[in-house]
Image 1 (cartoon, helix red, strand yellow):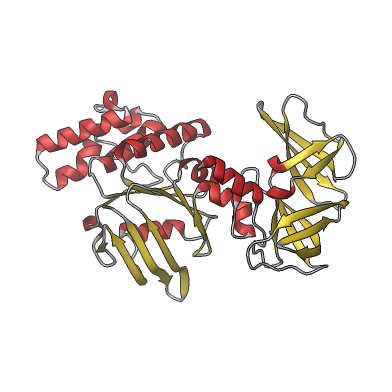
Image 2 (cartoon, rainbow, N blue to C red):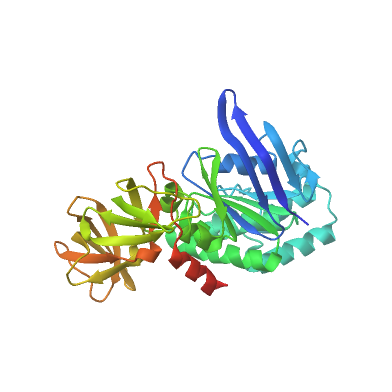
Length: 375
């Protein structure tokens, strides 16, 4: 079993703490994605698992063996970098088999592993080519194949799709998911792109400033974020945040008003133990798809600035009377036009409530129903 367990792992460069005590577990066969903004420590954490960075404090277990001080070559991991790092004078087959040949692996074993990896990645017809004769996507497949032939316990990916164009990124996301399903190995993947995280992961680890903000499935993080940072980072377009005020809070429910729609009182279920007080300043979080468009009446008045029509859907970018920016999802066939005023009603049971520290106060009834339907 190739579980990867980190126990209070820390990393410091001199007086600077980069990783500030991370505890997490990637179970055997899971596809775990580290995601977060640039500089949050996700690549450093991956390099510590691989053995390219020494752990300052804490413990790393791979397959129930302590690997904290073990050399990188002995950890049973294989890493795929953002750069393909292929030898230009070698063929695809030679690049893929290089590590095996350096380890004096029998030629029959080398050929068998290269052939199998090439079949999995659909690059058998490229085995005799040199890197300069291939596209970026093909070269990335070769880099992945180089990892597959080593038959590691754990695959580590450090933003492997960053150098590809948009169309190839989508294609390679699908290919990597297929690869994971076929091989069934533990995979840990680093990206700053939350779309990659949402579409590929079994489990997402959201990092900020060397600290884990939340760990969970893509749906859990999308529907039940632990704080405003996670709520804003996960989702594209991102969640809307509106300044609001508590009217009162009783029986596990907060009644909240938005200055832009004082006649529309929202009823938001509170998390167990959460308390609010009348007059308390809070922030409401609502995703673009959780508005109901209406021709008029009570609701959030939005002046449309820009409409992005993507064919199947459209996103409306606008601002309220109080100049709060809002993004709405609209029907692509009949979207509003720039300069129009529209009214948007908020779905109460999909609202999120945050205090002035960014902590989540609410529990989304819509999220509970969504999770139940998914189960």
